[in-house]
Length: 406
Image 1 (cartoon, helix red, strand yellow):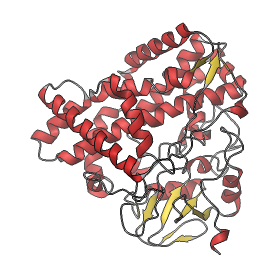
Image 2 (cartoon, one colour):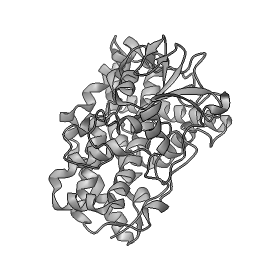
Image 3 (cartoon, one colour):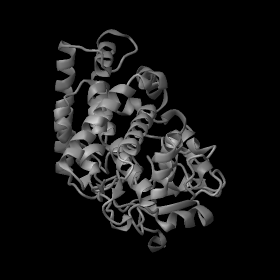
Image 4 (cartoon, one colour):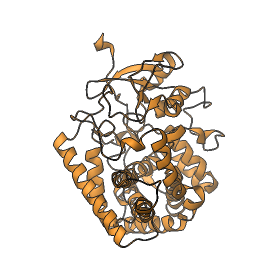
């Protein structure tokens, strides 16, 4: 019977195409068992309503650092979400999580992020200028996608942008699925935690107008505050997320639009399509997360659309599959930047764990797309879309590189 459980993540035909098994499961078995790289079994849900429920229902916990949770990675600790980490447990769920969000949410409002638009535009122009100066072809992933979000998040938390290569290394190791050993993971945590602790102390001695200065002040002076360990965990999470997710998404967005170049040309001809195009890229992408979504742990039996998930199950809401559910999106595989409900995709999650940084991520994607289409209307992929390669062995997806010509 164990042999009937498919290995997960599934293989895909090309880098930009979703695995066909996802559509098959969504139609015939939307609550399915899969075998993870660790050998443990988890449940994957592939329909929109089920995935949204798993993310929003408090009976599904974000805390996988508990007995009985499936290990995701091949390391002894089971991977990033299974690891027992100081300062994390109390901000994963419940009132501790609500308190944590309340402290950070003021920095990520739409209004506040719009104030960053000119700064992000200037960073984008500087990076594109440097890439163009090197001549065509250029690796857009290395020249722009991997650098812009790091510069932005470093400015937000007051970290030196010169340290971006260190963030990149630590994030790759910490997000391992099959690539790194436990010793390498432990060393990355020690180095990253030490770096963040030093950054906090430097910031405490010389505060600025950045997010870290505000969080440090709250930690030092207010009753409803972060502990020292929670502060370290928060800054580490901001730097990790700022390096990985948006960086990967910029490259993926560009590849998706250039793979079917009419999508890119439509934006060149009509810049008002930029917001809708970004939402369709976010909805249709299947590469950002290798696992498909952030796993949850069921604290009691929960009934989904076609099955009951028993208490003690590790459940993965597969966002890429849910975002192509025809019950939610008409003609779901069609790229339509004018789609009326396109922004209702689940890429940023749902419920109490809805991504705090999504206004910033959307802003960066919109700025990059607007800059590329206005300055490089003739931008093209150097290689055939089928030859693009995904990074492997980590929980985060993304392209290995993205060579373009102009």
